[in-house]
Image 1 (tube, helix red, strand yellow):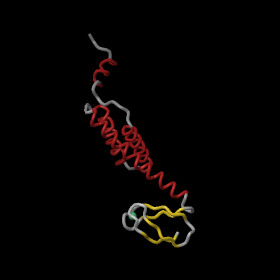
Image 2 (image 1 turned 90 degrees about the vertical axis):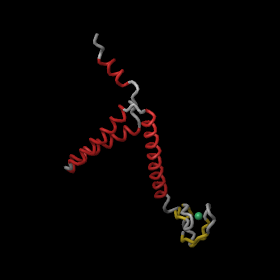
Image 3 (image 1 turned 180 degrees about the vertical axis):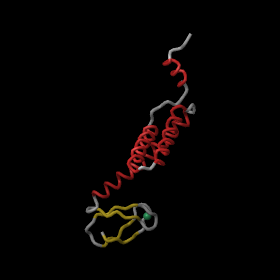
Length: 136
Ligand SMILES: [Zn+2]
């Protein structure tokens, strides 16, 4: 007896990662952007890059190594959060650029924020307690 296609597909997908996760969404979105860029810039190389991203995304969907695919996605999400955090911090610094001076401790590279408009100030690093002078 012939099994319905839907059931055959379900059995074939059983035990595979088959999860639309953050990394899958990123890979397919990046591929779409590359395909559009390839059209606009007339660079066929970008099409191949997009194809490679899609093949990797599909490979992950069909992979049976579920633990490894989940770990990949977790690492990707951590990396994405770091990037987003850095962008958010840049925006805050830019919005407050007239209110605060952001500088780094010359000894330990700790970032320090001091109010502007106080002339030359002695700054004590909150982390290593090194003192340095800056014009606020
Ligand atoms: Zn320091």
